[in-house]
Length: 115
Image (cartoon, rainbow, N blue to C red; front, side, top):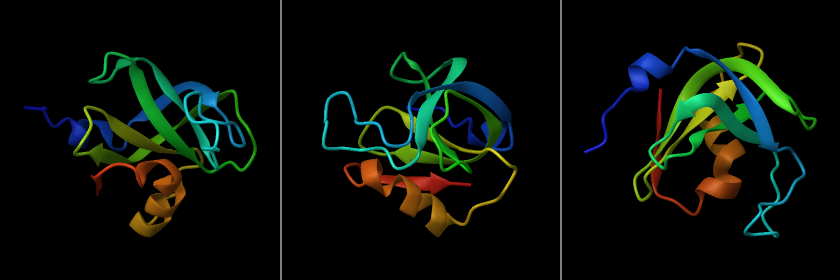
């Protein structure tokens, strides 16, 4: 059973690396183009044994690194990893805005947004 750390994570400041900037293609699915920056938090391992994945909101140009606040978590129910939603400018996004921004990839999974 997965332990719920969401209350400790949401509101945390994190920084990391963008490995799939806006406009880049998914390494396994070249037709999947990233409309937002996607990367990982350095030093925090996720359930899949890799560093924690994040969707980064608040910048419409490709980034190499990021620093921001976790505003939500997308919990995948049919996968073993969650995705953190990071806001660069301390802006709060509505559930609808977040779900629309991540739908390009999350439409392939069952999940729920945790706030």
